[in-house]
Image (tube, rainbow, N blue to C red; front, side, top):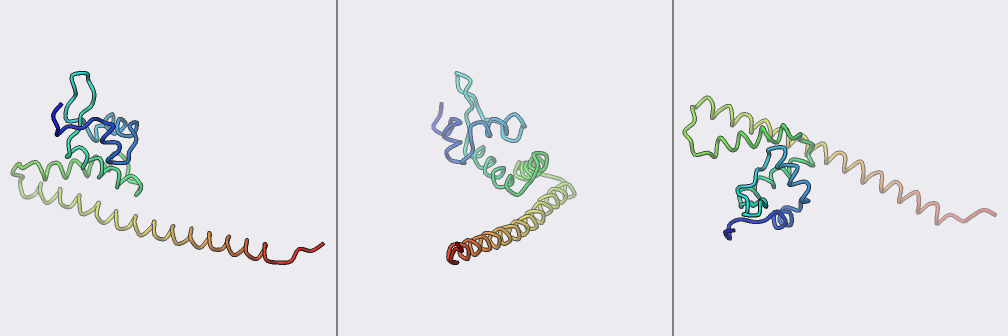
Length: 138
């Protein structure tokens, strides 16, 4: 095993994803290990870790596996070093722009949900304060 390859445990620690989750993303063809050890263990590179980090960031925003795959496919094509026809390149960039817009919308929705949750927590806290500070009736 070369020093540039990492075993799944190290990748899990670096990405804060479980081994099971990483294997699931492998099964879903989102991140395929760059190599296998002689014993058949999955081996990953920095590029694989970066790919997992994209997925990890998309998951809490509610993107589906298919949406993750679509974004990763677009970035893979753009990063391939291959000369792309202008119309294909623009279509890929449009796809990424669409994900950027969807991400901003989902972040805003999460901010709204967080504000509502904080408001609710404060309401409960005030309720408890009133209940514990009021004299008890016999």
